[in-house]
Amino acid sequence: MALDALDLDRLKRAIALASKSAFAVEPNPPVGCVLDREGARVGEGWHVAWGGPHAEVQALASAGDAARGATAYVSLEPCSRRGKTGPCTEALIAAGVRRVVYASSDPTEAGAGAARLAAAGVAVEGPGLPGEGDELLRRWLAASARPRPWTVLKWAMSADGRIGPALGEGGTITGLGARAFAHGARAHVDAVAVGVRTVASDDPLLTSRLAGALPDGRSQPLRVVFDSAMRTLLDRRLVATAREVPVLLLAAREDAERRRDLERGGVEVAVHPGTGGRVDLARALADLHQRGIRRLLVEGGGILHGSFVRAGLADQAMVFVAPLVLGGRGAPSAVEDSGIQRLADAARLEEVRWRRLGEDLLLQGYFPPRPDPSEEGLSVSARSGARS
Ligand SMILES: NC(=O)c1ccc[n+]([C@@H]2O[C@H](COP(=O)([O-])OP(=O)(O)OC[C@H]3O[C@@H](n4cnc5c(N)ncnc54)[C@H](OP(=O)(O)O)[C@@H]3O)[C@@H](O)[C@H]2O)c1
Image (tube, rainbow, N blue to C red; front, top):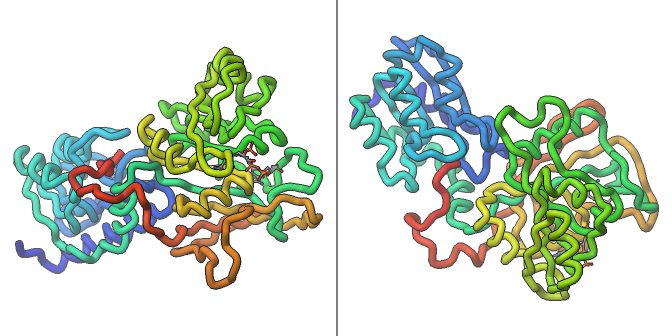
């Protein structure tokens, strides 16, 4: 395959666009797309959010009629399977794209994306820059081999690292900008989880509510409570709304009476016994994966976060830092009992990005990868990682 300088330039631009997907689409791969017609860039797009349109569809939308007869440069071989959105191969064919050049092959497609385009008469060339986008695709390839959701730990904390006051009443630490971002984040996951102590103290709804946060056609995420002994009170707002937005309670031991009460309220209950009388996180995540949960937002509190960090099951951190000091010896912190004792053992976040949201700061980063027992023995063909 002979790609010229313009082709390579456009492929590099597509890879640069793909990097904008970081922290928003995992465990889907970050993908970027450029549409070119006779040397002019007529459209661009990237996969902006989990559950939203893929890069090719975004680029086609931005090009409009100019897409007809254009060349599409994509950082990754277009997908041919239906996930949460339609296959990108069909969108490219329907738009009348004449030629598709992609930088890297998709091992989960096994050539199906390229073959579908070629069968429809589109000229296909790729992989045009193998290796160049590997760093971007590394996390997707690792995540797609695990039968568990991509797990984002999210918390809001004061400047002194507290996620609540010593007298644990609910309330919000951050301003409107950060809260809007957090509601948007809920709209782009399959499930939101909390520990039972957070349900007791804050009585959260865990829905995506701020105006415009939930795109048309998207349903609310599944709401999940880690509650070892089924202590969740029936008067909690989560239970009261369980018939409208599903709630799954993950317990560590059976209690027939409590289960009956919760199920009467519309709450689904599953039991996964683990060490220390708590829910076994690996089993709980495997259960969620089987239910189709691919992206999970864990919204605290610190005890639950600590368990995820200790077990090496946290993939990403989303941390809001507010300019207030809470102090107090009894004020909860964001990650309790993580098993980290020394500075040398700290979980140093990778590819960190900071962003300002009003008076608050948002810090995002990836937890350093750790060997994941659920990956063992899985071949590429057995990957769950077909894109959604
Ligand atoms: N600012 C924020 O972003 C934010 C977010 C959420 C919460 N908060 C604050 O955090 C505080 C509550 O957090 P918390 O740390 O005390 O409790 P938590 O993390 O909300 O709940 C912990 C409880 O979850 C249950 N659980 C079941 N399986 C578990 C497992 N594998 N690992 C860990 N826990 C498991 C345990 O119940 P059992 O003890 O029955 O086993 C455990 O005590 C409140 O003050 C709340 O306001 C702040």
